[in-house]
Image (cartoon, rainbow, N blue to C red; front, side):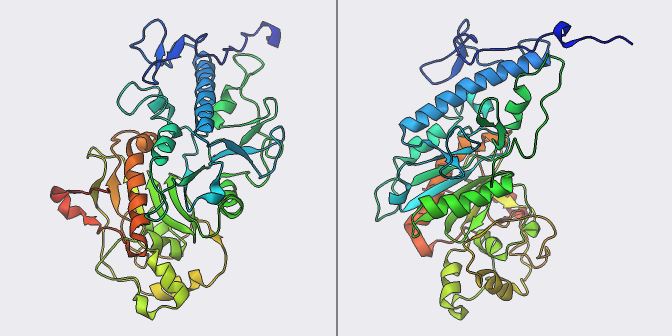
Length: 421
């Protein structure tokens, strides 16, 4: 039997995390372009060897992450480690948060896609040279810049605070003393170019209380919101594919939601998302004071999906039904009888069938076009202004706000473009 020892195998490629040395630069429009050809953006396929392209991409992505986090810190949105109080050299998951959250009357929490790095909406957008592309538009920089120009409410002219969870970087790389995504993990140095990636140790390569997406989201709701945000502050949530629910949420926008209405097991969350229909969920006059307050927070969810229609267009729902909702009152009362501060939305065997769910629409809430027709990861880059306008409308109308009516599929020829301003 013959074998090749590691010393004679092709070495694993290495590239410096420096844009200039990689042959790229950031131009005056914050686009990443080739130094030799400024009209050309980033190209992944630079070599026939897939490992070469993978490591090269990670080097460029490292430059992008460093620049994005530096600019966000300059906007007073630094990183903080989780669990709270963990030294930067110890295993931790970084998140982004406004430096003065305790003083904000409204906070926007973003739960990004599990495939993206902290502060990055989509590397696809960052590498694009179109209108929604570039370093600013493809990351949280544009969102934070826009947010700084908005008031928290009609009675508070200061901008809302922001928290960006880190659903994508939940692996702890001990060699680099940093949290990384699966994509970065696969690009870490190997013994040779033909060796496989390092095995993931479920203890050594995980962070306490943040071992999974569900645990990380729970920690953000329970500990971060509980410790860094004042009790009376309202919280708006942007959930990109992953999401959660808390009793202190004021409104929620779902980008590329992956659930169906019948899968929502939390009746309170279903009611929160619920759209206006001909059958009201409950009569407010019949509720206790606690449930009446909860009822006023219903109907404040929206879904933004990939569609060729202009951003902000109200889309018809092919699964819209006006079936009655037996048992809704008792389910809701039970959901709000607990003093639990946070209830995380879960999926699995539904507690409510499709016949008795909060409604039988696709996602349990009105559906809007995001302005992005092809890639769900680019929704935030295209729709963040519309999402902020929706949150502002909820904040300005307060308890008087309820959702627009869902369009049935048969009304597709009469699509209505809804202005959120």
